[in-house]
Length: 374
Image (cartoon, rainbow, N blue to C red):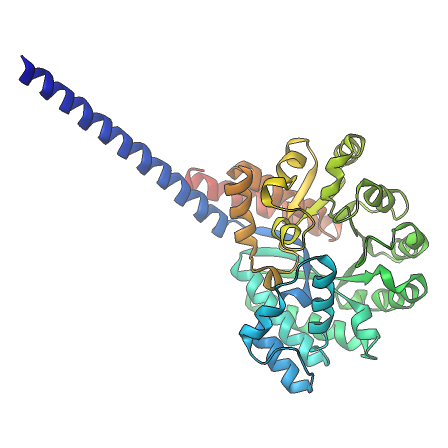
């Protein structure tokens, strides 16, 4: 009898082991399918800085070509520059490296390389910010800067399936008077692919309200507008960007979570937050991923997109950010589809082009999910 009982126990153990193996195998298959979905799904990226997306090897080559003395002599040295301790150190490094860009040819090269990189992430539409003050202060021709970048992105569009719009991102710490001058350049280059106007830079010491008339003029000229806000300053910065600047998209906006009334306003007025999780941790805007409010904002019904901000600076890609959303914040395939389609609907495109992009992404994502079973 004991032999029979022992055999029964062994049989149950074998069955349990087989069941566990089946469960583990099924989970692995789901994870693999979800990762393939992330890689293959068509995407939109709306918060991306050209200067923060330049490969270290390209930075070094441009610096040598243009006789610019960088505080680095090789790729590992450039990588060391990215070990900043806070947001202000990040801005300093950002501005130092931007000096390597001098001619229209330089901007064409980095724009083309970025366009190829976006296509490799299966990004169909992106908006890329340039920092005009960096080039104006060095007496570069902003028309040459913009048209060089536009040429590079156009080449990438011909060769790959990616479309890029340019946004002037003005460093608010340089004051309102200079903003007016650079806005004229942005408007003049709308025919060369400039679609938007934004403010970034030192959010702590320079609130958005003084730029209200500049933003109103940008809108009148036909530019779309957004603003960095609620990244390192609290809800007041976001309220100011909405009420004074009239924006419908906020770069970052993560500190909105501190004000329930603001979260409700964002939700009911369909204002989009362009969130950059890895950036927020790397710059110290949040202390760790566990403290990041991405999931809470999403669950509260706030419209948001997921972006890289400065992918080379932060050692990330858009696929990596989507994986992060899944692994650290519990996003599902449906959630990722919603994030992508929010980006398409918030794009600074003409209405008909925006609607066409939404339809294209909806159809392709639906087919992909059916194929992969996610």
